[in-house]
Image (cartoon, rainbow, N blue to C red):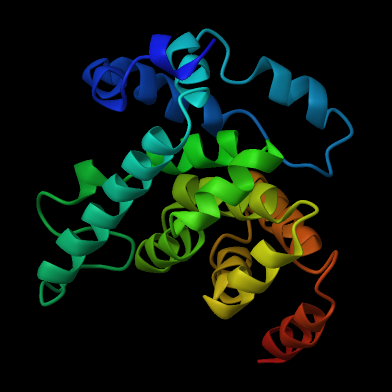
Length: 213
């Protein structure tokens, strides 16, 4: 399937149920590379969401647009930074815009080595890290973010270094601490840590330091 026959991101976004389905299915499926059934589960995900599978082939424009949606969320959060609410909640009008489906999409695409490079080139890693830091008590997003970081770091030292520089280790460790009873968060976060130190061993020192804090 070439890019000329692929639907635009706008067309994909117009079918809101596609990304909603992706979020719903992601909540019940572990996409962690350490899982023995990783390949089988990734092959099954996201099930009937053919729109996203086609969009995967459309290349840079779709990745750029998805990252842009996440950046827009960050911009909206900054505008409402003065609003004080309980931990884990979001200012009025922002909660519905939490880019969970977009983060799930990046996690899905990042299984492919080509997309690991492409997502990184569009500032996907710092964007994911920043959104994770803004919603530390949202278990589903923490799972999606950790999964994305794990997949982006598979056999990619450059992405591991970028994640370290952007605070990726910190948000993953925070996810572990903030969600001690969530199996999905714990699993995704542990896998992210394993991937982050698989090539860039200097990350181990930072990890040990954070673990001792």
